[in-house]
Length: 94
Image (tube, rainbow, N blue to C red; front, side, top):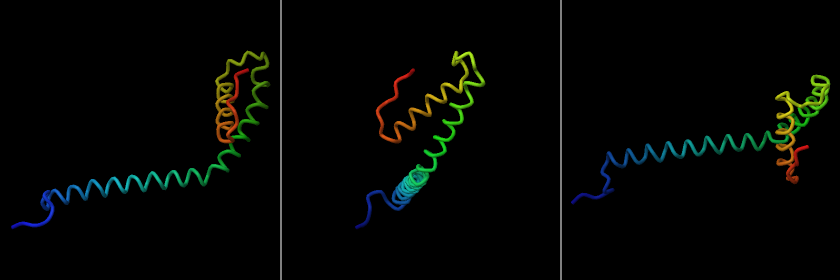
């Protein structure tokens, strides 16, 4: 009489490979998330600085006020990202 897994040796090895890969992928994703969370304050500060720079530069680059330059979209996206990070209500377009 045979004991052990109904999968047999080969089936157990294949299951181990898949489970091991899944665990490795999960750990890698967790490490990346941990790194992103740890860097969040610096990323937010950098985004605030970049936003301030763009808001200061764009009126000079596009004095007409038409807001056709793609950097205006970047400004809006940065404002939304900052508001989301701070838990602020959504920003309404001007």
